[in-house]
Length: 165
Image 1 (spheres, rainbow, N blue to C red):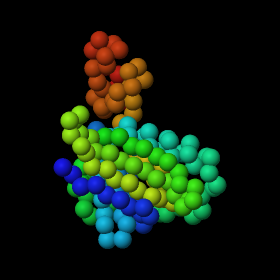
Image 2: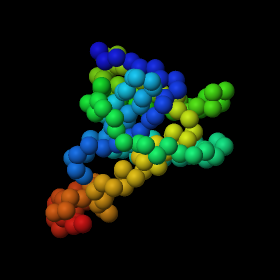
Image 3: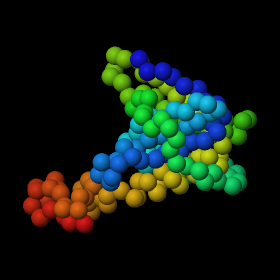
Image 4: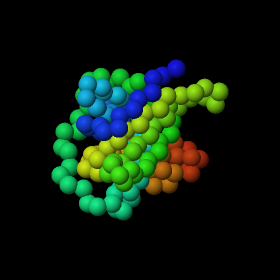
């Protein structure tokens, strides 16, 4: 069983990728004091997180100066894979709380990571997540799956006339 983590006031939180487009690994990383936690995510999870954070921030007071240092720190190796994400806002602490749960089979109990981050930190996280998602391969205009430079066998065309970049 993986280890759970509680970081109520992170010093930094970011998303990043390792590898070339089409083979990228998406990572969520947070640091509080000496503890650094890296988790593996899917591209769709990063996109949904960025979108939801943007909507949440619209309802809150504007953030101040956004952090600029958003590169990964060591260790890059993910502790576990994220299955589900949850978000809430703690008005008393003025913190956005992000809860990541480990992807496990139905009969297993997975780990949980809870991160408390400032509005500035999550605004930077949302911007960076959006930038990473759009920097990947463009989607096929017919099916939405990513296009490779050589095209792909689009299910909407039954494999004929593969769309090109």
